[in-house]
Length: 425
Image 1 (cartoon, helix red, strand yellow):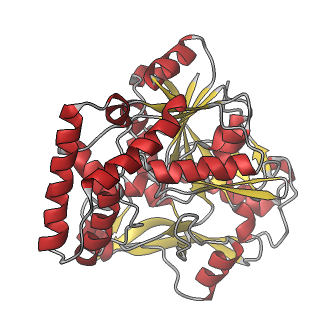
Image 2 (tube, helix red, strand yellow):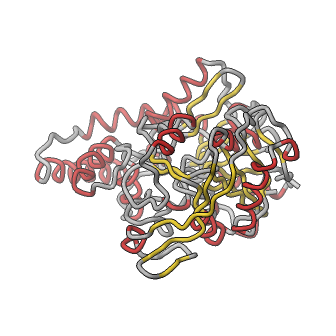
């Protein structure tokens, strides 16, 4: 059975925690897009693990963890991540990497930093956008190219370094790179990763054929999708459910469920419109109680009330079948909690997410208010034991989206997850 986990907001919804929770039951966890710009925090017992490229299922020894062809691979960061996990006693021998994974190279990171001065999108400066641009422009390199080597590859590589150096020097006035030094460095990195390489599309196909439980883990979120997000304030890949197919090499008929993960409130990082953003004390309470600081960059996240408009949109573009609501406990101290049900735009009320970024910038949220529960719910283990007002909050989200809630997280730890509906069934 194949299940896709997607972020249903602007990312940072707690996908790492939910993936880790479900990975105990899964046979295989697949990361299908993004790069080291993503950050998933997993808390086990009293330990926190910050994962960037490695799937969250790595903490389970018997779970096969796959980095698919849709992920842009920063080999230096991946090797650091493997080393850190192994230092902490985590066995990474169950990791597999697609031969087809495109590489993030040093010049991609440099150009990302230089270009964002003019784009002003607020990227992580990890080279993700330039690496994806080269992939689409057929100017990139895959890890298999380094393993195979040969004169054709080296000629292409040196030509690309020369081309990138001209841009870096002539447009930005900065120093470029030595092609031979870079080539030696990345060949060394690829050699260390060679033992993990595999035809991952075949591995995933065989696992699904053998009726194993396969979990596809997206990075970022629906509103950051390159096609369906708040363009241009988006990432450079498809975090939506369709990306699971192209980013891992399996067909859409293999997918049985799509789980949309949403916080009990809304956050986003970087630039771009955010209708329910709170810049008052309530927003700061959400930020502090929710520890809303980026796993990868440490940037403070912008916080606001729950937005049902974007969740309905996420349901539509992903084909979401089940919801996982995270960080419910962050709302424990509020007398009143709010849900945005529509946007006021000029003299109209919009109930569907607008196509135009300029329209979204002018939208004001239309709220309904619900009574808070004013109780510590962090130790609650069943839905029926939640305070009645907390139950009603979740039921209102279900009513507004038309989708049932399967999981409710009341804290960061594995055992702080309420199972309302089984996912693998």
